[in-house]
Length: 234
Image (tube, rainbow, N blue to C red; front, side, top):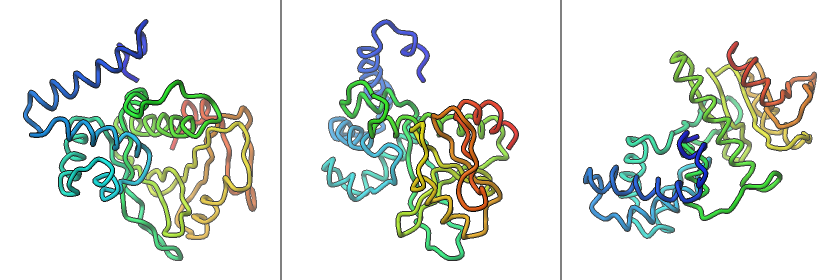
């Protein structure tokens, strides 16, 4: 999502240069941290947690950084627009939701480079995270252009989860597969039982619209149509 890298003939080397430039100009020269090697270790570990809950204790242990310092470093990433925070939606009647936010890096290419991952292939676990990150950024852009909108995610203590809650009205689950299984509906059905949401969607890489679940509760929509035709009307 960085235009100069997207159109580059040497995208991989430009990505590496971008990360080095960020550490040099945004972090070191601005004096935001005292220990740049420590921050660099933290950055690599934080990238492994993209699209996950921010477990600061685990990140501190893995990066060998104090937990209090991890909080400070995450704030730096937010302030420099490297990550976005997705707060947890805590409205519930039957199930206790988690309170920790999830975090998404602003660009999947930067995440991949920090993780040391190669090309992302369809059907791989990383492809699922990449696709979810892409959809997240479409939501963030939508909310930026329409400030009245709010975005959350929902997860219970029993690990039932829905990827996105828009305006406390619309539940959206993201699937990188062209096929949908009954298991893919479990989080949405659990949320339906809370009786707080108006509409339920699965956004996926298939090419047909479907009605799924009990009483055709869930509307499955190809992601292109959802982004261009459905989301602007919500």
